[in-house]
Length: 273
Length: 290
Image 1: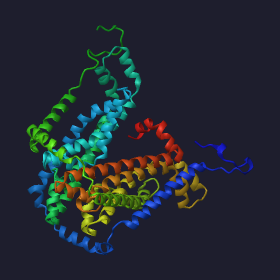
Image 2: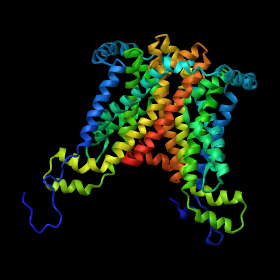
Image 3: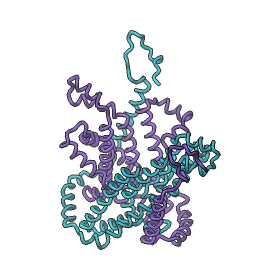
Image 4: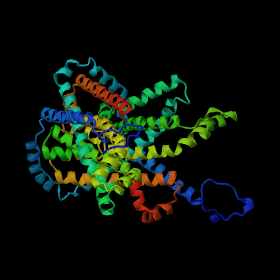
């Protein structure tokens, strides 16, 4: 870390500095790059200022078109789409949990002490996370056609990386004591898993699952914009027809579901975990 | 298995007896899955038909077609610009809002409105916020920047507030006891305690904005997403593949840079450490961050 020997100043003149020269230089380079990036972006980004002056007018227009809110539309079609969104999020999370369990186990070095398999599992997790759920949705719409199936699979594939990564980390942090005791008693692999590891990672597993379900409820609301089912499809058609009063209903419905999901998750976490 | 009669605690016949509730929960879960699949018309036949399609779909994705690279580069640069500007604006705005929302430093009449702003900013997915901004400021990068700024305010504001609420008040009291004005209390009592966590949120948010800036284009808010969606709707699958490869590369580069920045500010790494580390401790870093 701090190498005091590299400072050539004599002891009498030595001034306390928190960072070495190399550290200061590195930080300076980072600041410089950040500022250069901001300046370059601000200069080259295509922003039409006339649109900005127009914004207040447009917002007022938007609000007047949204009012009065088309409440009857909720019963007609929004409710079914909203339920579909929740099903997509829940089924997608369940599928992701099923698929992520083996990958998470493979990623944990203390369970599978074989580095190539660990790296393979990590590659699966990283690629799952680095593709946005909308992109997964596009791919699955291409394969399965528009609809809830594509949305469910998109949510599941996006979540594998998240759940698997956190589950693998929880497994790696498990105390070796109970596992050693089981091994000493001659327990087979499956017993070591169910009685040694599972009780230790159970709280982490359920809290990861709940957390991801909460995220998935939010994400599944937009998947419909690319045709992958749920309330996003209703939103997309209302937007394309400029039916802003219906857009308002849909936005309120999404907001309500997101808030309810968050309350459910907090309550369940408080009671169960 | 007979137990000695002296045992003070009665030992149950089966110490690992299963409770009934997990089975009930499992049955309920299976019932729900069947119900939801029926509701959404998901069936095994559809999956099988899809599997047939998958082969054809992937054969059209490959080989990726980079011939329209100028369009690709333009879109990627715009996404990058959106991410940088939105993160900057978002961080600059989130710091005062997050500070105002901290209940241990601010009176309730300041913290509640600030918390309300943060909750509102977090409630919608950035793509939905982008739809509203497209209506307000028109198609283009500005809508994307504003949408992701809102998302950043929500995320950084929330985490920053939590970080400030968890600080030790001893340092704050010590600085206050010297008679320092409020800004000095912040600068010397509060910020040093939250700085390293703040770097963590900021790099995470830049990363997240980069991911989302490649998507807001789907609703017309600028960046590569518009190009991607247009190519997808025209069944230009080989160009779609090229765009996806570029997006994933960009995101991975972003993640590497974010990790480097965290190492520099949190672990006090120098440039030389970063390059040296890659050889020696790269395995360890993979475990830490990904």
